[in-house]
Image (cartoon, helix red, strand yellow):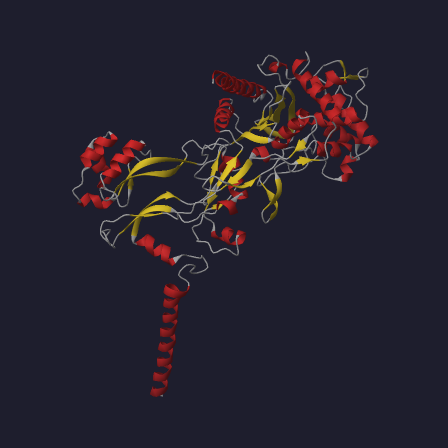
Length: 591
């Protein structure tokens, strides 16, 4: 009996011992790079435990504006001090003299330091090239002047660019065949998400100092500079954003206190986003707080009267725009007296300028009687019911999309609705179930300004290697199904009437330095706050009218009747762009 117990105990000990040996082999020999379901790099983690390091560049790809100005980060030289110099006699007086501070401030920065110190943090002192040269010539161990990347303090276009985070389950789902560390940053939203596979971080560039368990030097006082030295990676994503314009337009939106909404500005010639502002702002501590992560310029919203542009296009093509025909614009679309708008008897052109609901409700019904699909068809011709962001083949991606989470507009919920004439009338004035994204509305203006040439919208022009050579260029993509040049010309005239006609809803934009063409919209949302009805207020247009350069959509969501006008926002943007263009033109003439 005792012998049997001893045998069982010996076998159990042997099994346990074998298991421990296997576990040890797994940790030290087999799965050192990808341990456990979390794919932990044990070698990397072990180095972290016995080292102090400063990351110079995390290795993830970067976003630059169209003039190569960094959008997500900034790089400048700073002073880095390693804490082991506290026990050394080093020339702090000379370092302090070079950077223009008192020596005690250097020692104070090191007093309670458990790891490397970036002098001046959280606002690091910026060093000149000469200061960098002089400090490094001193060759003091643990004292380095290096160029380091920092997150921008004045980040812009946050919802367009998006944000990153550590999410290992999402990482495995997105890249099941890649061996990636559990702390790999991954794009969660915006361009960071769309271009994530191009941006995945390579090995970081860093300064490393090895320490023992007490924080003392493990291999002497040598600090190692670790650099992947890859001339091609990380990649740079060259956006179409103009940093200067983006900053100015963000200031305009905030000055006008747009809480929910924003604007999108397109370069008509390139059909590319020059600036995009979405509010609420992104809260970096909690991106999903108050919908801050949502890009409202890609969100389908109730458009109101800007949709009359679609009805006007269809009416032109179906000869319903007879200049001699008049409409009673003192009536609502149901024929009842309009207590708010008493425009009187107007023809087609004046009806568009004054944004007469009765006229376009009636025209929508007549069009629906001809063909129930007409409104949907023309909304598609103007790019309102499909995604307008660039999509196409990029390497092994058959249908690569630049815009993540871009919503799609609509006219009706189903085929039955479009057969109902009352629904058609309400849809004709941009109500009922009509939804449009601001980016699609701006693209519609660009299409009209170009004479009917409908294109996909780009926010990125190219992907470039680290050394500046081009990896991929995103071409302009023209779409076949669009309005005719004649229809576009007629719409151009109507949109200009909105500004210059004495009944025009955009007459407040008449005397701007750039001639504007556009359309206003005020949409009922069927929601109330404190007893007041909430509205969506829009103004979309393009300018200069004679030689179109910019297309702009401005929207202020969930505002009351007496607040939140977007015409002043549109006006300030036009004035700002004129000043920028005038300065650039004047500067070029001087050169």
